Length: 492
Image (cartoon, rainbow, N blue to C red; front, side, top):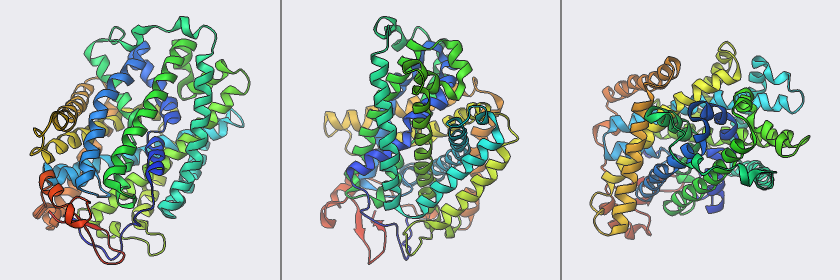
């Protein structure tokens, strides 16, 4: 399934702590709150904390699925490889394509707020200028592009600094929100129940936004070839990372319900956290949270670039996309062709974005469109984990629950959200979401007809065989190390 290339990605760069930081940065707590709070409240009102809670439970099933699949197949393509080797190569390619499209859309949806927030630190009126925000956001994007091009070691060092400052600011405001006057009496337990949802369709609409909030933790899977003891580390880091961002999401959405009115939230749009900051600490509070959101946006731009470039690298290596995408830079050990292509496409989208309207309009449509694609490839990964571990599901209660029931719940939830939301979203969001997925059929059929080994002779992924084969190769399931500079290769 995987082609051996003359040079692979640099192994053993990231440790456990580094990978946890990458998982947190991938979900981008401050950015996700700023980008989605107004959209989420517009969809479900006071039930925003409930939407995040009830999405987190099945999302954990997908996290478990990723962790278990990563134990038996270390691959920069992550879901692209796993789904293709368990369900069908066509579904595997579309799974990887969904991530690529969602990440590409995010280059605009993430970079625009980065530019807007940078301008807001100096002059709030400048932040409303979409053209100027696009230009500044493109500058941030290019900076992160260069960092990612410089290698995983440089990437993680930058991430430790950026995400560390972001989390320190957010934790400071968590304390401030808890101490805010009247916070204890204003809280209502019904915000965590189902009473505030407008029926099943309203719940599905909120769940789609919530899925986008959590998206990004799976960057740990795409970094697996560059992580020490990745069969254990990647899954653990994703689990810890999703737990931390869940607590931050719940705390801040509850604080928004307590402190701000629905009118303020809707009017605030992507600046809702700045309003919250000023309400908690008048004067400097708003600026400080703007800084946190800006840092979070820059951090998640970096992790998204890693996801999309590593996915394209794996596709190029397997000849399901142009083979040049599988090229690795001799000095930096990064997929430099994939990085360059993503950069060029994103800059073209930046130029087009200036004609689409305000930053808020662009974000609202983009979040829903990305939510569809995220639900699609997360759902496939959940099923892939069940199929890969089918021979072990009844070995113990633990295997049955963690390897079967929970991933199945996560997968069913994701597909239910996907289907139900189609009736609720705008035509633009549906067109972008489904159109982006449909576009993947073209390269899929093209490289299938060209005879890519990925399609012709896929090596089936089976946990029983993989774990049995682990011992001869030092305990790393189904892997052997090639010669100097070669990437890991699967044997089954």
